[in-house]
Image 1: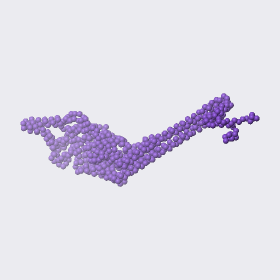
Image 2 (image 1 turned 180 degrees about the horizontal axis):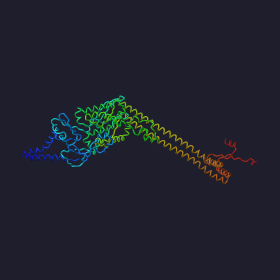
Image 3 (image 1 turned 60 degrees about the vertical axis):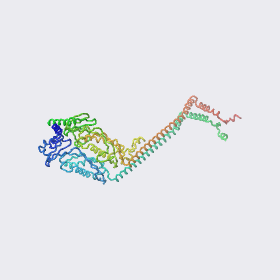
Length: 289
Length: 337
């Protein structure tokens, strides 16, 4: 029974232990996606495996791969896309304005061997290069260009930094000027004040324009109303005069008669006190007194 | 016994390693990619071209080339071998604040407008992991969401710095003002110059639309599809905000004044037109009896000539004698002698 127990435990751990030994002795390597394994032996790089999947170094590098666990080392390098954001890089515009610039860039390791051994601090060196290139590209540019044309400037930075970074096993991905900001608070306040003044000016202009438009509407209205009222006043003389003219043109006597009849009718309707007098003027005057 | 125990141990290990530990399920909001010895099964070496990568240059397309891998859909139980590993990822739509930055705590992101005004922007980015391009999200990019945010914020800030109202000088040429007097005032005053913060606020939907268009390439770049980019807040400094409020109040006041003036105008013009109609009708009413009487008298004259007319007049005068208080009648002197 003891033998069975011992054998059972041995059976449980046999496979993991066997695999651990195999891995330790470099009999196989599982290379993940976007990973590279760099093998060194006696201070020399014997090769790199960047093909994902199950790999057997002995088949690629020969029997010397078996010595790597004892006299060398296997490095695992991620080749996935990484990113870094460099905040507040100080630059001066052409006008002398101090500005803070944020640079965001992507990079991936494309040469793991160079990445590991060419530069002791490739990340720091890349940051320094991007910073340096950014400052040299953006300094002494017009502030407006710096603010509005940042993508093309980003491409310039990338083109400048890429050759240097490739020496260290890096390939620079996209580079973007992510932030351009004013660092001087007094300047920020001045700009704010300028915008406020501009807005106040707009408000005044808008109000004045509104008053002008209202004034225009009122004056146009007065003009049109005046025209209409004049038309109304002229309606009676025009219509009555036209009618009298027509009657007169047809027969003068008819017009005289019509007016006489109208006068008589109106006189009767007026209920005025009526004195009928002969046509002698002198007598009329005497009676009137 | 040792051998039997060894075999039993191997069987138990294999049972738990391959049997019990080999089954897995994928929930409805998840997708999975299985790797064998670390390698994902590829469907093709370059992902589909229908991932919005037409928004990238050919150089960028080359940089963001990723293989298309086999994706395990929701369901199960699925079985995996001991040397396989399952990478699950949620493809449900998720949201993140625009101000999210893993390396800095902030409530809003700053952006400089075309008129150099520093303003705060906030909003929400809705995204989901692209099922059709899982490789970059799972393997190709170290921190995909940070990349998306970095790209998005860069594009946003440049857009804010360049933004002008596409409709031009509209501060005074609003439709309401146009309608108020019925004619365009024309670009009399270039008032919108220097107030791009106003343009930004008025054109938020346009800005959001632009951002969505620009960020279509994130699917091909980072395996993340942007569902929506919602910029909800543009917060200028308080004093600018107050000045903007004053503009809006004035605009409303001007619109109200114009509307009132137009209404008054219409009323007065209508009333004056009525006055013309009234005067015309009164004059017509005055003329109508003249014409009628003239027509009647013409007929009388046609039949009886001038004497008939005179007779008519004399007849018309007769009622005067009834109404007269006094009549002075002259007598013929020859007759009294």
